[in-house]
Length: 146
Image 1 (cartoon, helix red, strand yellow):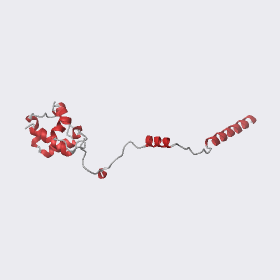
Image 2: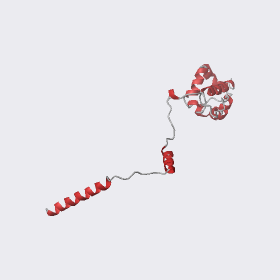
Image 3: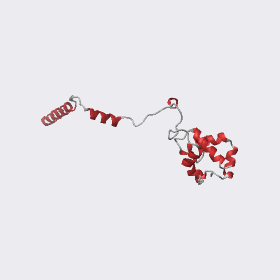
C-alpha cells in the first residue's frame, strides 16, 4: 500500500511538473523587417476569386492589344481539331460536314463554340478568347466551308 501511494504521488508530481513546463508564458517573438516581409510573402494568397457580378470591364483578349481576327483564332486554337477532323470535328473547307450545322443557324453555332458541344470543350479551350473573337472564328470556319 505504501508503494502504491508513493507511485501515485510521483505520478502526480511529474504530471504537475509537465503541465507547468508546457503552460509557461513565453516572451513575444520579435522579427526583423526582412523576416516580416518573407513571412508575409509566404502567407499571401496565390490569387483571388471574383464572383460574376464583381467582374468588370471588357472581356479578355489574350495579348491585350485588341481583338484577334477569326483567322488568327482559328490558326492558334481551332485548327488543332478543325484542321484534321480529330474527335469528329468538322474540317475547314469540307462543306458537307458543315451543312447540317449551318442549317441550325449562326446563333446555334456561336453558342456551341462558346459553351461547348458534345466533344468540343467550351471556347475550344481558348480561355483567353472573347466571345466576339470566337464568333469571328466561327464566321471564318463557315465562310471557308461553304
